[in-house]
Length: 256
Image (cartoon, rainbow, N blue to C red; front, top):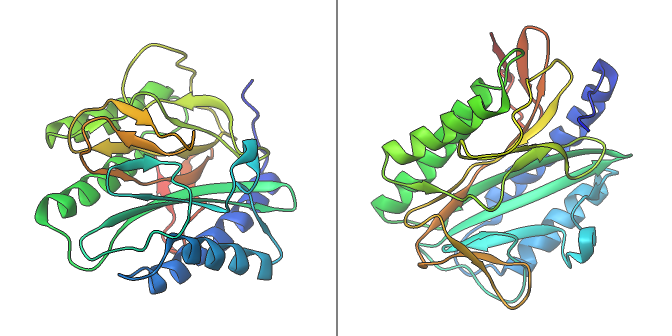
């Protein structure tokens, strides 16, 4: 069941989203060669706790950390640990903030030092996929308009999108209906309505769309060890515009 949100609820989710965006601003300052993913996790945890919120992913379905840290061929759900970043890596950070029961979710993939041109292109195209998907999340469209925009842009740049994992509703829980696939495949295709709050999150691979799960039962990697990038925003659908809830940009609304 899709749970629509009213203006006050959207504002509260947006308050969580602001803390989340501020967290990423802080993390961007410390992501560099030599830092461990555990240190990134601790920094994210401490920042949101100081703001009176809590990490939404910590212990969610027994996930053992506050933030997902996914390096290079790791697509999503990487568990922070002792591994240290190296120049040329890319790292996907996926984080959720729970502020008094209202939840926002966002992801970003960052370069570590100087990365090669193909990695730069992957990051650029994946973020473009996110923006194109968001632009389709308007009243009257259907969920697959988002999926098609993401898929078509990735394929036109000779990349592929992950099929096994997808975006979703968010706000009262970490994962809500509807599912938002990153390709126009089978499944539900509800019409987009005012009050929907959606986490749109393209996961784009350099090579095959196939993925595998490591022995830790969390970390998802590309089946061919190619690079993967992940970007995500939580957005709200309003009557005549889309509002991005997980950004600090003042220009956070897209009119129809």
